[in-house]
Structures are given as C-alpha cells and as structure tokens.
Image 1 (cartoon, rainbow, N blue to C red):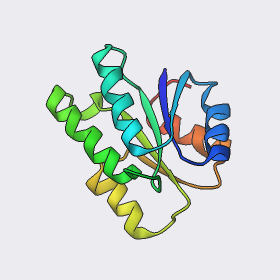
Image 2: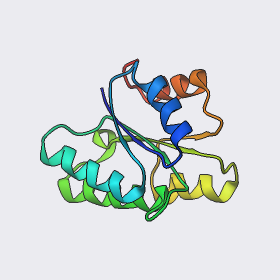
Image 3: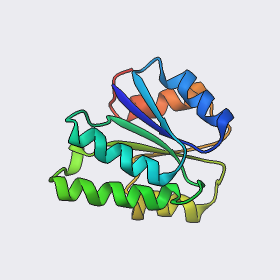
Image 4: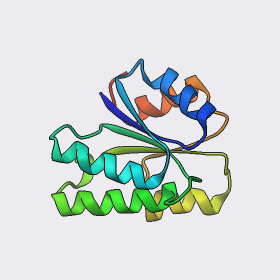
Amino acid sequence: MKILIAEDDFIARRILKDILSAYGDCDIVVDGDEAVQAFRLAHEENAPYDLICMDIMMPNTDGQQALVRIRDMEKQYGIRGTAEVRVIMVTALDDPKNVFQAYYNGVATAYIVKPIEKDRLADSIRALGLPG
C-alpha cells in the first residue's frame, strides 16, 4: 500500500510514520500545498496513493482545502466512487464544524482526533477496506 502523510507537526509525523510503515511505503509532506503536489506527481507516475492521512491545521494550504483540491483532481482524472483515494483526516480539533467540513466539503473517508492511537488508526484503516 502507498501512503501519504501530510502533517506539519514533527512528533505527529513521526508517530504516523511509525504506525503506518507497517502497512506500506510512506511519503511525508508538511503542508497542504505539498500534499496536493505529491498527489498529482503520484498520478503522473502511475503510482497513486491508496491512503492519505492529513492534518487539518497546516500552514499555507490547510488539510480541508488540500482535500477539496485533491478531490477536484480526481474528477479531472475520471476517478470516482470507490476508486478515490481513502483519506483519514487527523486533527486536534474535535468539533462538529470541522467534522462536517471534512466529510461534506472534502469527502474525507475517516476522521481521527489527536492524540493518535495505534489501535484507533488501525481500526480506521480496516474499516476503509484497506490491507492491513
């Protein structure tokens, strides 16, 4: 499985990488702009991501905005429905507004509140039907 981690906090990046490395190859970016660029490059190289774990609060382009741009690119590529990349939004913000935006505006497939727990992340990956 090919995984993209988009997280600006060093400790959170390290925790996500430690957990997700057991599931596949991980690429790491530090903001939403880099996440969008990495997503585009992966498709251009015919090696798309299976999973993106993306923080909501990041510099430059935040996770919500990056996810909307990624979903727009998928539409341009003709990718729809179950072929879309699975996206787990990871954030310290446990409020209804952010949950709604992640699911409705960005079409996130899961949402995890920090602190990141290995079992909860593993459960989310299994629920998405990804290998693990």
